Length: 231
Length: 217
Image (cartoon, rainbow over all chains, first blue to last red; front, side, top):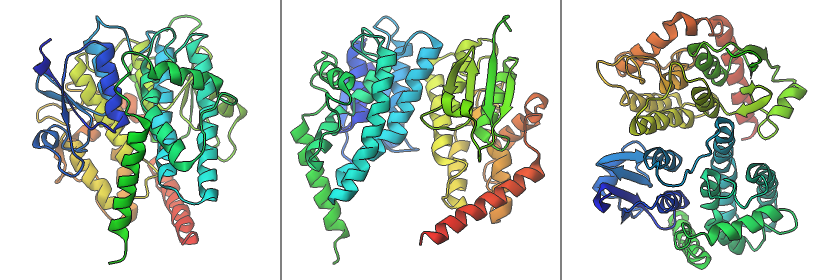
């Protein structure tokens, strides 16, 4: 397929954008990437996603598709010759979708909160909740992987992409907050899976380096403080 | 229904999320047992079937639980192929999923945001409808219709309580007509909770919310 048929509007630090990039890589789809700036959104982005004005947006044959989970499912339904992303069994699909919603709606918001939380007590409280969530995800991993290396089994699948896309920020927040969330003791399955996922050829080069994200977080935090500082 | 097929729904009478599941199954003519949960005293079964969220609705199919209403709707659509809820074409499916997610994010039942904001979101939702097509699903009721039409009842009740017209025929004519068409469909109408009870329940719920908000300031 010609490169210009598929365009991804994104931003390098966004795990939601990373998801789509990983899925495109898995399906070996050639695409054009357009980097969007948070404070200066392109006309194309505003026109393609008027409701949310957010990345990622996939534009395929001039038609926009929004929301990372929806884009990944779309890619799976259109590029059927490549490896399947969602499981084939409806119950396994429901399980994958359930955990995807959990990660997006319950777990990641906590991680974002931890990134900007100050004070040891407050940090400890949030990291406790995050760790509880990781224990649930460890159980989910054991059930879904059925003894293989990924949530999707032998191959990377939907839940691998959805949860794995957060690994960059997970490592960055661990550094920023000065604590460990994923460890070999409590979540050995996830610890090994994380290594495996990040070194997969469809993932390498997509998830930003931890230090780069830590630097970005510092810049964002400084900007926020400057904005809210008394004038 | 195939022999030995067991379908159960754990729900709550005033939950629009449980309603979605009932509607999806009814539209596909799937027989199911409905079990009403007492949310003030959750059953051991519910806690066992949905340990992560401890919430209804939960669909139980041949002993396997599925939770989260939109996840359940997709599962129902994939398991029982008659009367498809999602469109066939991938791009249209993406659009349907987009609007269903929008409804969940912006029109949650327990949302504490101002009714005015809810109204604005409904105007946005209107843009998902096409002139000349009665439903989000086109000529027939589809995924988004099932996900959203509860707003026609719950939104009206909220509007009555707070004094703002949420589902406004003038501001959102297509949406109003769509919701009405869905809600008047006999098969779906019979699943609706009694309006008077729902109004009382909503009033009490809002009072509790406001009391909690006042207590925390």
